[in-house]
Length: 174
Image (cartoon, rainbow, N blue to C red; front, side):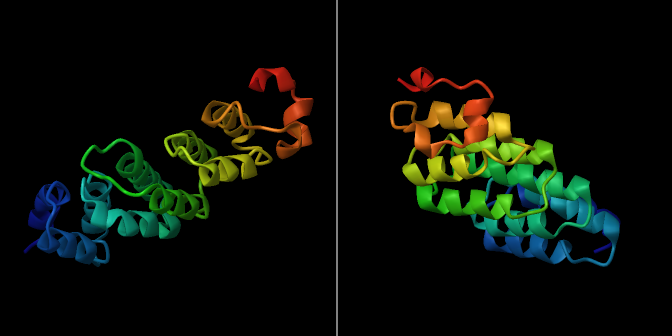
């Protein structure tokens, strides 16, 4: 159909969980009309379909527009953490978060991802959080999230010197 019709129907596709809707969304992301691509990205970012998570992650990594990247990051995080219908294993969710962190993110998007890592309660998520403590864009958030994840399992050597230099006390973890 015409671009206008496609733009009007894409939000409906984003709300459906079936192969035909996935195919339409994926095709629309590469449409030659920029308005259709933007509408497809918006619909994809609003989806509740866990099978579209790889598409959201790809959009987060490859989007040329900051607005589209922001939509994809937020949609991915929502699918990974808040959507009741999406039940992914912790290892799969962690891989998705690693994938997001490999994208060229702005500080605000990194903070969203770091804050969401706390929804995974295993050592690998904690290790990923700890690896972000030296990132100036999310240092504070990563340190706070690491504290919340498993406060009774830290050893001082597991945290960076910068973390301790900024006023953390070992007693805070016991």
